[in-house]
Length: 291
Image 1 (cartoon, rainbow, N blue to C red):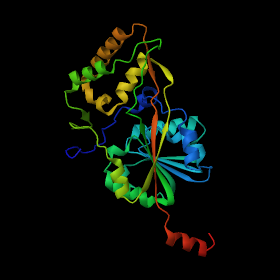
Image 2 (image 1 turned 120 degrees about the horizontal axis):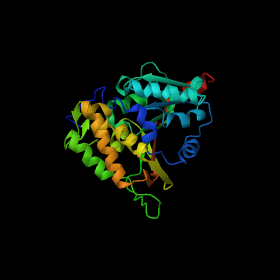
Image 3 (image 1 turned 135 degrees about the vertical axis):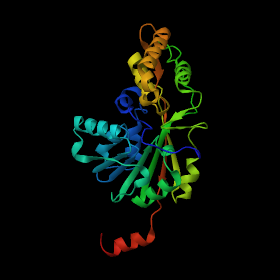
Image 4 (image 1 turned 90 degrees about the vertical axis):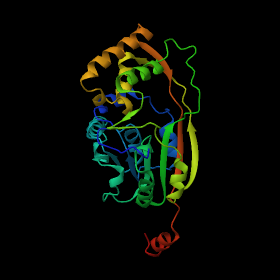
C-alpha cells in the first residue's frame, strides 16, 4: 500500500448496504470474547473502524462504556441509529474520527477492537497509539474471517453466489486494478499484522477460532448490498453509471438464480488477542495509593 493514500471517499455511500450485505461473524464470537477478555460489564471498549456498529453493538453489553470511531460519516450515523434501536444509546458513543487522530482525549480503555479495519490505517503509528490508550494488561483484539478454510455449499438448496462473475462485472465498469477511494490498490491490502503489533510493544498473540459453517440463504437484494458495501465497489465509484451497473448486476444474479435465492455458509472468525504487558511501576504506585 506504499502508493495508496486514504481519502474520505473510501466507503462513501456504503453504510446503508453494510449491515445487510456483509456476511456475519461466527455466532459464537461474543461468548468467546466475553470469556477470553473476562468482560463483566465494568470496563471500557474502543472499536476502531467501527463501521455501522457490526461488532460494537453485540459487545457493548459486556462493558460499562463503548466508544466507536470511524472516519465515514454515514457509518457513524448508521451506528448511532442502530444503537438507539437496540436500546444501547446510553452506553455507547460514536465519533467520526480517523484512527490516526487518536487518542483524541478519549482516555484509557480495557479493550480495543479492530474488526477487519486495521489494514486501512497507518498501522505502525496506530498500533503504538492504541498501546498507549490501553490500561496495563489491557487487550487489543484483531478480528477477521478465517481465510484458510474451504466452505462448501454442497447439499444446500440454492445456487452459490456468483462472486467471480460479480468481480468481473465490477472490473468491466471500474477497470482491472482494484479501486479504493480516489486511489488504486494494485497489490491489495497488507498483511503481517503480527510484526506490527509486536513492534508496538504488545505481547502475544492468543489465537482463537470461532467456528462458522452455518447455512445462510441470501436474496438478490442481499448480494447487491454486499457488492455496494465493499470498498472496491462503493456506490460513488460508478458515478453516472451506477444505475446501469446495478441493472447489469441484477441480470447476472437473475441468470445465476432465477428464484432470487442463494446459499452460502457463515465463515469462521479468527481472533487474535494481544496484551499490553503489565507495567510494574504503575502497579506499585497503584497499590501504594490504595487504588
